[in-house]
Image 1: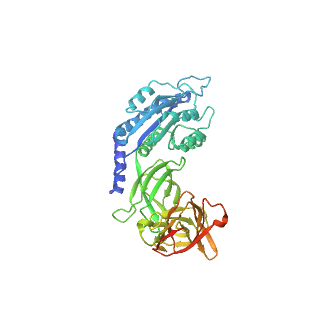
Image 2: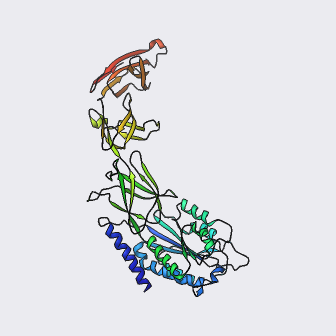
Image 3: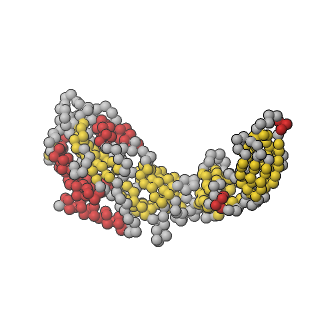
Length: 462
């Protein structure tokens, strides 16, 4: 009967999720690895719900394992068991009494049940040490959801801070936020366990079962999310941009999606793991962020990120196939750091605002306070360059200058071992100052001036 109820709950959750995302195929699920850490300290001998806590907690644990066994194959799941307080009787307390009794692998649930049936509580409560050791219980894996479920009736009785250890494991990306089921915990001690993760207070058997059902639903289900990229009018009309969801503590990338509008013209629905708190990076230029996103179960979670954009087009006149290697440095107005480098002759979306542009033509061109407006199109036209061939009769030292009035700007220093050069130069006036390599006096300096027009082709023989 209990199995039937849990199956029904699972089917109901699946039905609700599928109803919300009719047009979206659920992604392939990563391997979920659940490590149970079970308390077998002497306090578990005390009576609870008509039996010893250890026996009653074990009985309820078996119900949880039965639920997981039913869905294990469909959910791509492995289960392992660590026990503490079961090897060394007290006194004296053995603060290293913790052991991985069943390692991760396929079809381990029967092994876990058999192992728990052979254990009797006898020792102390080294929770921090057990959590720390659990890091090595999870074999290396590139795409795994590592989950700890701690079942205990007490608090740390040895050195170490379980909350600090739990937080360290999460920051390192070893595990997601652990689950803790507190069996008949004293009221004043609940906060001590709550800081370790998702705490469930099981004051009686019914609350223990409720905790089990909640945990099963959360570790075996993804939840639905819609990301609204808002324009300046607050409408979710921006799209076609990459998004990455990072674990809030470890910074690890959990998911990447390309934002899309569905057939109804609404932002498409995606699936995310319910267990993480996320930091979202929307990869617009510049990026937009939303941190500490907590998802809710059983609803369509809507995340709104203001992302108003307009278009910039740096248009170099002439043959676009030739101009395609010219770059444009984009900086936020008033900020000297390079924000983005785009290809000229490519339309680029930018977040609305003011930008400074540096176009890497010869000579470089600068445009300050370029305004990008919502759905606007800022078209910057760069004159077609001219092609100039420069031939030295003999190897020479020299410099190519752009000449603007009395200002000479260095564009290129010639190499004494090279005599032939080809440049694409912007319209304007130029000067070459040079000296043949074998001539050692400044009086041997040569000079030539020329003008370049758009689309021009000229040869300078020196």
